[in-house]
Image 1 (tube, helix red, strand yellow):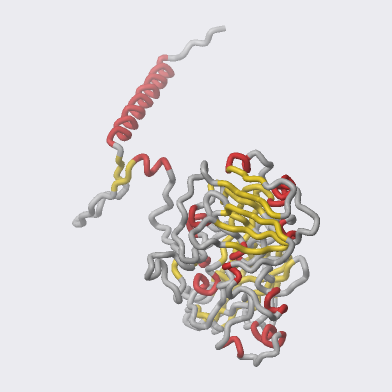
Image 2 (cartoon, helix red, strand yellow):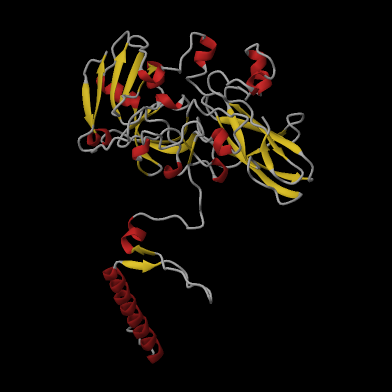
Length: 426
């Protein structure tokens, strides 16, 4: 049976259609003009030049809010760009982080070793795998995308992530670590496609930058969880992170995560490469620390440079991670390590990835020192500087004036003054 619309319904429908036509016409006009005003009307007595952005800018690639000011900063020792106009180490703003994923645009940058960021056409890029293999093969980016892909969350951390007494903020003490979801092909898949020969024990990876970044890792690691990654956080890897292809070596020191990956050679011995300069040691105990990161954590709030407005309840929070696998426990002390309390693990826990922790903390307004320590699935516990000094048989205050051997995963203390200001307590 056919239903009849009331005059009111007809008028309403007609009004909606007219409004829609008006909206489409207005939208077309805006598109034709190609710009929209984004600045609010100034208050009485004030003047402001309206900021305009093209409609394509607002639609093509979204902007963050104008009120969000998180930025990367350069390390004190080597400002970027340097006197040669090149990028050195640039630090992630961990103090502003939420969750565990670092936005691609805020991921730390490691030195490009005397080279500008390569401008690589992905259609022309090739990955060569050769050496001790049955079938040396060259893969285009299209070839790589024909293999089954994996997406995994992993941190990358530079060996230069050493906390020093002069560092004021968590960005300065720990900003050379970031965590992303990496998408690509397992390196083991590609090696199996080529057929690894008996007697092979190492692989050497090489990048396409002017000063070739290269690193040697054991074949066992290459066949375990390494990724030839073309994706980062749901989009293509950024040029600063190795576009169109980089190697991700989960849990290992950042320099082994070769950017602009173009060649992998399967070999039967360790090869010293440019990247190894300053990253190896004749001392086996020290050398071991420059491959896999031990358990590590840092409180990001409250942390250096921040201020608590007064006594009360706060959400103490931070990040924990380990190159040995998943974080299993994070403890927090608000009395400089005299007593410890388990923090809550907040959110998902991934192997060899940043893990968010937190706890309710009632600050009474008195001076205190807050610290955290993590334990990973291997049972490894993050050490204090005093414990590390005892292990290496050096004076207890040795690390006040000397750098930590290998990778620095020592406990980071923050001192909260009675006025609420927070400072590095190393």
